[in-house]
Structure formats: C-alpha cells, structure tokens
Image 1 (cartoon, rainbow, N blue to C red):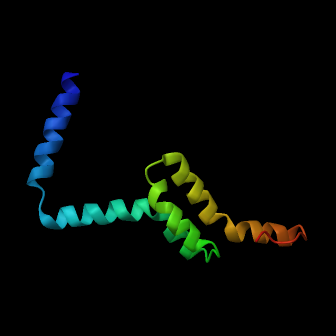
Image 2: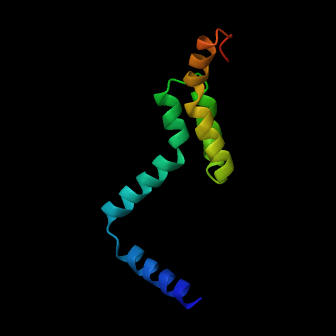
Image 3: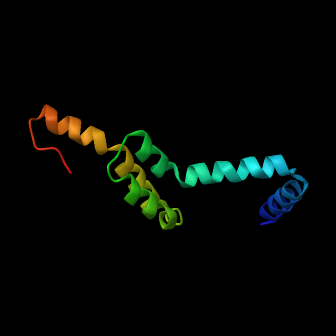
Length: 92
C-alpha cells in the first residue's frame, strides 16, 4: 500500500510541474485515443461513420463498448470485400 501512495504522490507532483504545452499534448493524445474508432471509421470510408462517432462519446467510458466500436469501424470494407469474394450480397 505504501508503494501505491508513493506513486500517487510522485504522479501528482509531476502533474503539477507540467507545462502548458505538455498538458495540451496530453489532452490531444487522450482525445485521439478516445475517438480512435471514429477516426478509423473515417479513414476506412465507413457509411456508418456518423453513428460510430455519436456512439463513441459514451462508449469511451466502457472499454468493452469502445473495443466493439473499434471493431465495427475497421471491419466495414473488409466484410464487403469478403462478401464479393464469396459472391454474396454486401452487408449494408
């Protein structure tokens, strides 16, 4: 328990000494990771990118929902390619 308290004290001191540029970069990194499913949906040209972006806001609080959105964002074109390869109707 003492190790955890030392870590918390060290982290708080480091956080208080951080400059504005670091805090801004850290905030942008957190936002990029939070909205990674939305960014990937845009990159893979998903037709459901708007729905993914809307669901991404509350899904960031649940790792399971966030991972599910991540999978949904990256599997769009892949499922259509596999459907075309198998000569099936693409998933809409």
